[in-house]
Length: 264
Picture (tube, rainbow, N blue to C red):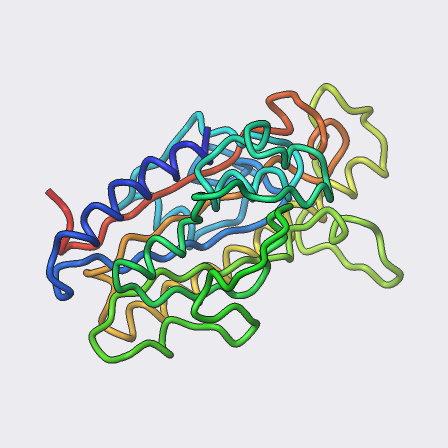
């Protein structure tokens, strides 16, 4: 599961962060996106127009069987940020706002204690009732550039352009790509084809966003010292995707690239 995998990565990174000298600590960059499955060229989908993600994947670890712990965002996000299953936290129901038990600390809190500058741009929505500050900065303007010189960073950027609401038809909507037959579990109707066409268009927009974030890292000279995670929170916001406990609602892309400084 992607959330448990991220938690295991987090434990490893916290161990590194706690024991290594500042200059030897990896920066950590999460590029996350909403309501999108592995309909990417890197996963063999020939309909996808995702050249930046595909190029990133060729120098990365591609998880082919990553799954979310929930087919809807807030419960999935609560597990990702805590390393605990939502059923353990009590955050498995949307808008439950579960309270963390005494002694529970979230990933950015642990990394801040280890000396990291932790930023989130900008969605939290963890389904948790938090009464404390967990990020150094969490806003639309939050950025790893705002850290102190030489300080390692943990930065999260979240793309909302793939959210299910962006698949809904709009007046004057023009499709970028061709329409395609939907999966066999959906009726092959003009409406379904248009929905999937808009979904693939949104993945193309995601690809451009990913390209921009990776370019920022390259231009800063920090690509070699950064571990980059690219992943989705759960499946597509289409019928039998989001909110459905089937593989179509849980299977997500997850791609991890180690900078040259941290490759074996």
